[in-house]
Image (cartoon, rainbow, N blue to C red; front, top):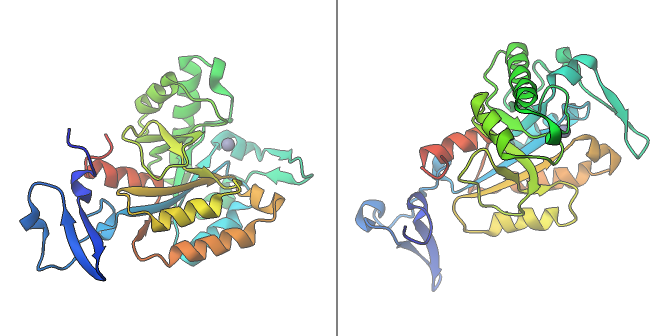
Length: 276
Ligand SMILES: [Zn+2]
C-alpha cells in the first residue's frame, strides 16, 4: 500500500514563495488540477478536509444550555442517552455538592433536534463482567427505546464508563449500530478505520483542551477530526461555560472545518473508503 495521505486527500495547497501551488502525489494529477485553482477534495461536505464534533454523555439538565450554545455557533453534537435512567429521572450528587439530574423523556423530545442521539446503554452499567446476553440487552433495548421515543434511527453507541472489549464491539455491530465511541482518549485528529473502536479525541476537562483545538485548526492532516467528549454538568461544576463558548466561537469561524455529528462523519468516511 502506498504511503502518504489517502487518495481523497492527495491534493494539497502549499505556500511557495508567497504563492499557492498545487501539490499532488497521486496517480492522475491532470484530472485534479482545474486551471490552477486549488480544489478541496476532503471527505467532508464541501470537500472540507476537517470535521469538528462533540460527544456528550448521559442526557443531563445542563444539556439544555449546551445545545443552545451549539446552535448559536452552528456546531453539531452527539448526545448519548440511557433510556431507562431517563425514565427514572435518576439523579446523583457530584463531589462539588451539585445534584446531577437526568432530563425526563418529555424534556428531550425536541431538545436534540438537528443533533444526533445515540445509545449509552439502558442503565449505564460497568460491563466488564457482563455476558453476551446482558450486553445485547443493554445495547439493543436502549436502541429500541430511543428509536421509539425520538422516532428516528439510533445509529451510534457510546460505551459507559471506561470499559470496552471485543465482545462489546461485536454486540454493537450485531445490534445494528454503525459505530461505537469508546472512552479511551487518543489525543489524535486521525479518525479510526474501524468504526467500532472510535477513541475519544480529548476529554473536555483536560488542561490542554485549547491547545488541542488550536492544533486542529492549524493541522494540514487529512482527514482530521477534532472530537471533544464530556458531560455537560462538568461545565457547571468547573465553571467552564465561558471557556467553552470562547472555544466554540473560535472554531465556528474556521472556513475549512465541517461541523458534523458522529454518524455524519462515519457516513462521509465510509463513502471515502477511509472507514469500513
Ligand atoms: Zn456516561
